[in-house]
Figure (tube, rainbow, N blue to C red):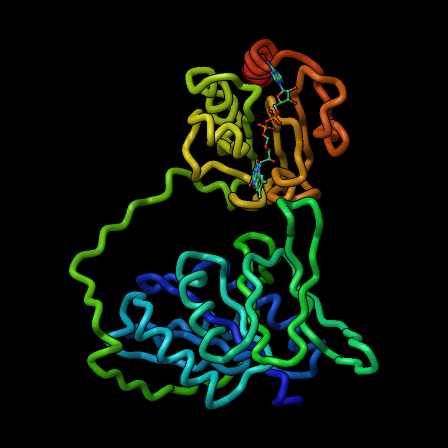
Length: 338
Ligand code: FAD
């Protein structure tokens, strides 16, 4: 076992529920650690959350570094950053991964700055590989892969000299493995001490707003683009989604036009979805939108332009006006469901 090449995962939890992206990262971390013949350490912070260690181990951790303290009950930048930075300085992990969530995006740059390491934000893939710089060959580096230049190229970024190799990873892009109830791991409690500067910010009140939709877990997504034409007309997309028992997605153009809220956006700067069926209505199929679509889904595209790029990836192609096609599909569904 190569202890110099540990893969650390920052596990996000909110009120005792572990974020899906953290479970996805544990699964990916396991894969990377196996390539490096090393182990996965999970950073689990909060208060009275020791019971979550079991789940973290089932998803891939070998070691859980548990910081359990009343001041860590809910996320605050300074106390959380202090604990992670102290651990990084003391133990020098090889790789550290966080979800590209508001918390991960807040915490990761502080860690990178303290460790004088680089940081790649919003990765969509991670691999282990070799890197040559002049005469020097670096082995077992983390390839941090993400779209760049507006999504027009896929960049592979490496950080050969300054470690940890730090990256945030977008939610939904890594596959979450099935939990292994037989896995065993260690839980190590981390001593935490804060001074007044770490606690300068106090949480006075917390308000949670539930998400309007569960796009990530949906098995059917009906998505609308700017071709839908108006906010009122977007009701057609909602009607089809409701008929099929699916969720509503959208392009950024539809969101920017105010047809639907941002929580529905699929794509590079939105959500990644993995449904069994994806119905794209009035969507041209740009690379930035496709970045959020799992290519293993069955795709039905409705578009009035026979040359629309979405047809290159669609399994079923309907060339026509969505204002006619969607009502027709809803009618056909009801007739056949009788
Ligand atoms: P359009 O490209 O305008 O396509 C509309 C389509 O509707 C056309 O193909 C047209 O033929 C068809 N149509 C029109 N009328 C009808 C009708 N009556 N019936 C049937 N079809 C009709 N986009 C995203 O979606 N998600 C992202 O996360 C995202 N991130 C981005 C990040 C960056 C850095 C950048 C630069 C861009 C990003 N975009 C994203 C924007 C993206 O480049 C496109 O602008 C957007 O996806 C286009 O949306 P659309 O397909 O709805 O619109």
